[in-house]
Length: 324
Image (cartoon, rainbow, N blue to C red; front, side, top):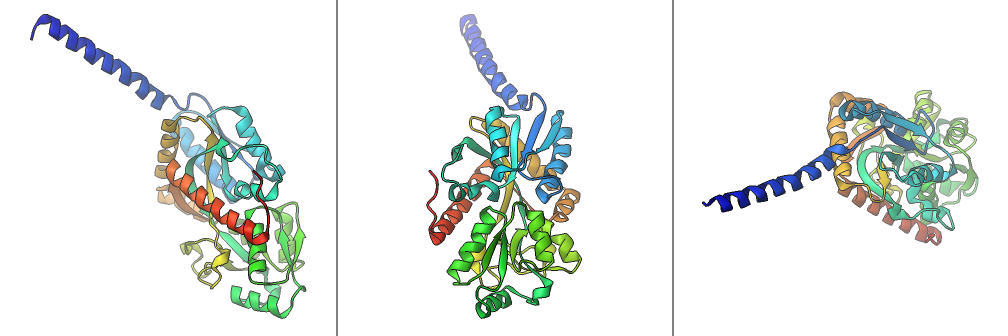
């Protein structure tokens, strides 16, 4: 090989190496500063506990602080606007999908576009319970339906807005059941009234229901989740109870602003998957009424697409025209 050829080959190799360095540096660059998780719920919820647990673990991995901020109110739109308005890939939405997948059915127009939020990682599935006061003396979803048929218009159900409430309303309509709706501004008030028997039905996260279940005032007669929960083995899914129309998974995950680098999304999803694989972490999440179910950006995107299709079918059942 001549000196000229050797020199030319060396120049090509240096050029290739120089091109590879920025790509690697870009992958390693995120996060460059503190990260914030914005939650559309108040402190103490299962999602809030999960976010804080992950924040601590991710801070150790990333060498940057991960701060959790609660931004409840406005049907989750306050939190979503906080994330999108920041235009910063270090400010992310940590949320149950049900807080926003129902927006097209609940609002005449939306202040954001659906594709403005980019899925990053599926984290868990919240266990969602169909609950009644123990004073109602029904032991199963089948018994509950039979009671509603026997006493049309005499019983009430709590509604605090969101996909879960639309799900229950659509279930009542499809089963031709007559039950009065009682609107609530927050889930805590709704669950308290359920426990006291002032309302006779409510769908909510098991974590919210659990204190009243443990006190013997509320009974969960089914879970809306598609998969049977090992941590609540004695409670059937709605499908197992014979009512698949009440099937709805409580997806929880991280989303970021449009344009967020794919390398950062993949890294976050990978780190979360490794963290929740720790049995100690998984057991803590199970105690909050959640099932560990980590997923990649692509898997979370698909799960959200399926949930939106379910919500769309609910809208058709209820005769609601979705916002554009």
